[in-house]
Image (cartoon, rainbow, N blue to C red):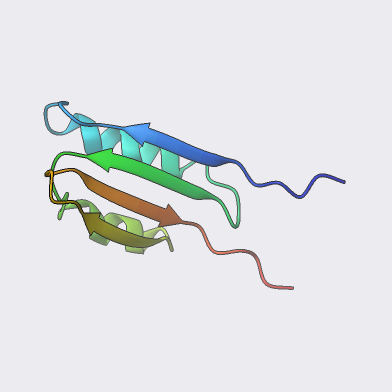
Length: 80
């Protein structure tokens, strides 16, 4: 049995709004329980945080000195 959960990586730098949000939300829809989506962005996408919370997803944001923002979005594992 393979318990490996795919880790999805998405780079939305340089895309015009609302394309980054659209692509991120589409990718989160494919996340399995315990799955992780890592997004590379060129800014902090503040408008997406409420949408991720509505979907029960957690997000950690890291802003690098070079202006790159990395979001790590996780779908909780199912309990039980």
